[in-house]
Image (cartoon, rainbow, N blue to C red; front, side, top):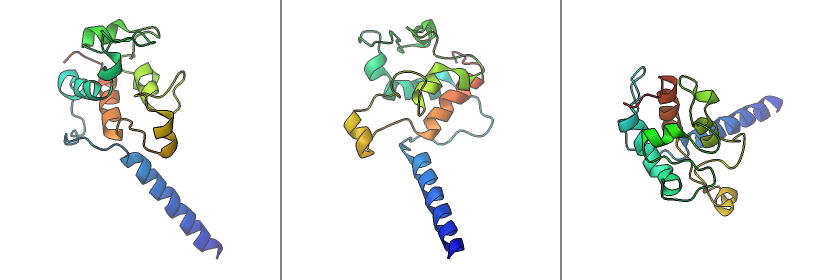
Length: 143
């Protein structure tokens, strides 16, 4: 009986992890080949346009004062500094804010409390977040 409980718990954990990793996988872009270079123009900026520009455009008011309209605007940063540390995605504010439990404020992109509590929040897919992290780790070039 104890073994059966252990198997059921293990399966439940695996299903939960699979469900979490699969959330928001709406990307129509094929996965990047391992070791492929991430391009700001072709890979990163389309994600920013889709998820971030509705709030972080230069003409919009946002409390962070961060405009993401272009590479140069992004590099200027906002109230909390530059969004990335070249070569260090885990230390970059943008990755921290797009991930669970950011160091300050709410997780981005913003979702209503109702959507979050109902489990209907829309976050970046694992693939989209990895694309941005890879780009930062590769030096965050304007390519």
